[in-house]
Amino acid sequence: MGWIGDTVDSIKSIQIRQLLTQAVSLGMIVTSALIIWKGLMCITGSESPVVVVLSGSMEPGFKRGDILFLHMSKDPIRAGEIVVFNVDGREIPIVHRVIKVHERQETGEVEVLTKGDNNYGDDRLLYAQGQLWLQRHHIMGRAVGFLPYVGWVTIIMTEKPIIKYILIGALGLLVITSKD
Amino acid sequence: MHSFGYRANALLTFAVTILALMCAIASFSDTFNSPSPSSQIQILNINWFQKQPHGNDEVSLTMNITADLRSLFTWNTKQVFAFVAAEYETPKNSLNQVSLWDAIIPTKEHASFWIQTANKYRFVDQGSNLRGKEFNLTLHWHVMPKTGKMFVDKLVMSGYRLPEEYR
Image: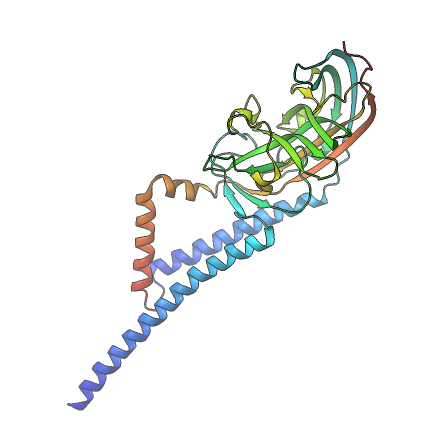
């Protein structure tokens, strides 16, 4: 009867090994995603290298759900560039076009005014109370590239969290049940 | 091994890879286009020119803009954003760029145009330096692709001058 015990043991050990392998491969997926994200941060110099357009204020150029690739270089900001900026007291960054630039003689500091292509007026109404210009530190990056529609995935997931949980659950189930 | 799930996964991965590759090639094909746009801007009239109560100069002018941007359009072009900016230097600022007029050009058919317009955005200086100021009018364009990299360039037209006196 010794061989039965051996078989049980081997099955048990296989299951543990399989479990470990699955855990490791799951860890690999998560860490490689993190590596790609952090690597993009290093290359582009922007704290969020990829943003999703949430409003229609830049239509027809950028629609809701489009993805923008940002780049933050040392180059000075110039009129016409599409920048992503944070206004004091607002959570969500805004993607708009620079229409006016004033660059100081000695310090090289810039003051810029932005406007959405699809908006009627400039952005002074969106800025903090009494703020007339954006400074360098408000600006997170400038848009350099563009990919349509892909951002809808994130918009759907943030607006309908149930779909996110279903998706995560299904993926988890797939990882656990897969044999090879 | 060859279950439905695996086949679906393989198909999806392949489809997404091909799509990404096609987007990259479409964007890359834009680099073969060497555009040669042309433009002319005339200042027809200085409508008014004054100092605001808090000390900044402001001017209103009427321009005549002629441009041919048809060569910017390729099969991967969604739109061209064109704008005219006044650019000048003052003792305080090494560069001032003030957008005066802009337009979204959706198709190649609309890319050769002629327009007479007053400045759409206010031409206000930071300070009081505009009397007798020489400035450039620059036509900038931003080519927005259907997918991929955006292209930017400009055409500088110099030799414009504001009047010596407020009016």
